[in-house]
Image (cartoon, rainbow, N blue to C red; front, side, top):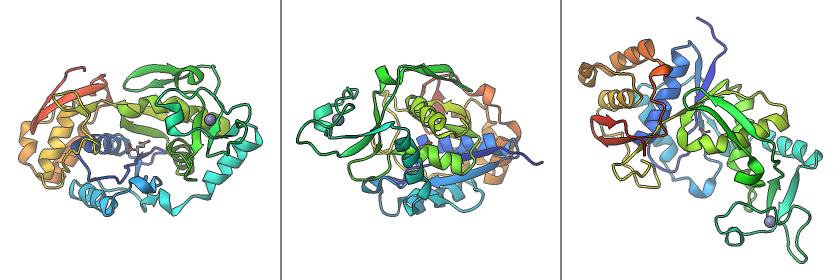
Length: 300
Ligand code: GLU
Ligand code: ZN
């Protein structure tokens, strides 16, 4: 079967693959494979200060162990993409960008007020580059979470597209790479839902197609905190691959047969591809993942 479907998994190598990222990996993999589509892996290592040495290889070895085999070569953002600066130049030529002198401390975790929008304050030098936002709502129909919309001006403010350390910001890099790699649908964790309107805004300004979006529920600990590298979630590499995938299928509402826990990894993957149904994924933002074999559907 041929298909124009291109999906991807885009981990940041800031630690080993933990259960939270296995869900995004497996969900995007099954959504692509069940359609006969391609599945790419992109290593989002552009944020060099946050990269942990060895983590990229560790993630790839874990994906292989889980039989989540990707198509083609892994693309490493750190190897550079001339398209980042081309995209920036295009936005610049449309007078959408401006230098910003504010530090994180000036902003204090608040929405950016547009302080430097009409020119740098006297005596201040530009540090980062921001893009002007508008109050025109950006909306999209998420295939799991339903219709979403955001007023960027009020909710995020003008956002950074090149950081003070001269690194292309995540939102611009992700949009350029998805377009450049021809990604048609993005399946990822719901923790990135709030980023999506900024990314769609950039796609529209750059004349890129907007892919479909599926934001999967995010695994949280019984205390309600996201299972993430920031919370030092353990890597899954040491667990039995079939059990990890069985748990992830259960988490994603696919109702896997308990016997798959002890089946071969090939059997689990085959079952997943044949039975994958996006409609069964719980329409929840978070799901508590209590222990080794129980995902409790609780909205937090
Ligand atoms: N690299 C991002 C992360 O690991 C994901 C980016 C994306 O899926 O768009 O959180
Ligand atoms: Zn500023």
